[in-house]
Structure formats: structure tokens, C-alpha cells
Length: 215
Image 1 (cartoon, rainbow, N blue to C red):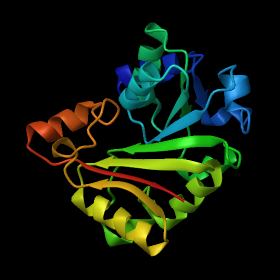
Image 2: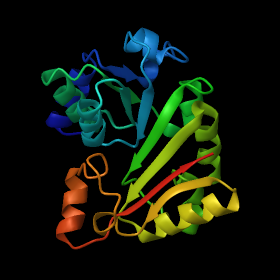
Image 3: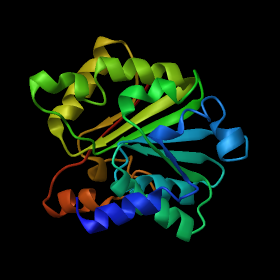
């Protein structure tokens, strides 16, 4: 492991806005009241990477709480550091495997979920690892409030089509669907937040897919 990664791992351990996977589950059912010290809605970004979307959402919506989830601490370091330096106090990060999400959040605790440019896991043998596969959807259903939504932004047409199929298959409530976000009517201030990788996709003239659905 490079020295820079080691430094980031060491530094992220000192950040007050990061909960590590070995810290136990002290905030399950109490993220708003005990971690953020308020009663505001809690929104998750899954596989948040460097946390760009999480931090931008926090800046846009100070009346909500945002938690970026990823397993790679050296990635989380960037978003957590930015949030601390910029005083974005309604943003936190949780370093866990997303498969274990039910261990960290109570039933109906989450108001909304964002999944932005996840690994599409295109191989058929890796379907279970797709973040919109049935086993993950069942977990989201449990932690989301009844009216809560899931948002998927992806450059991968295959993942977009797969998720659309699952929405139909399980009779979920489709709210928004577009295969070309920036040529649609839906590209508002929130959906126009662009991560580093999204900017690269757009430079390569790649279309951006978007789905919004609920259970």
C-alpha cells in the first residue's frame, strides 16, 4: 500500500464525521438524534467513492442529513475532509460493506437513497453484487420510510435496463425514467451535480441514465 493511502487511512481515523466499520453500531435508529444532533431527515449515498455527491447534497440541503457509505477509507477521506474544511456539518460518512447495511440502520430510518455511478457488475455471475439486485432492493425497502425514494444515476445502459426490469418485475413505483438525463426535463440543480467520473463520461459524449422509484 502506498504511503499516501496509509496517510489517508490514518487521518480518516481521526475525523469526527466518519464512523468506521469496527466502531460497532452505536447509531442504529439514532443517526439524526445522536450523530447529527438534530431531528432532520437522513439521506444515504451508497458506494459514495470520494463523496462528491454526498457533500454537494449537504450543501444544497442544510435542512437534511447526508451519509456517504463506502468500504474504501482512502476514498471516503476526500469527501470527509472537504466537509470538515468547508463546515458542512450535516454530512457524515460510514465505512462498511453495503451488504451489512441492515446492521447499521433501523427499519424506516432513511428518507431517501442515492446510488451514483456504481460498479455495474456486468457479468451474469455477479448479478447479486449489483446494488439494484433483488437482495439489495429488499434491504432498501426495510430501512426506507414508506414514502422514501431510491435514485440511480449511471452511465451504464445495461445497469439502467436491468434496474428498470426489476422495477417492473416487483411492481415498484416508477417515478422518473430517462436514458439521457441532460437532454430531458429532469436535469435540475440536484441531478446536475457532477462527480469527477461523470464529467469524464460526458466529455466522451456518454449518455447519463436516471431512475427514481419507490416501494
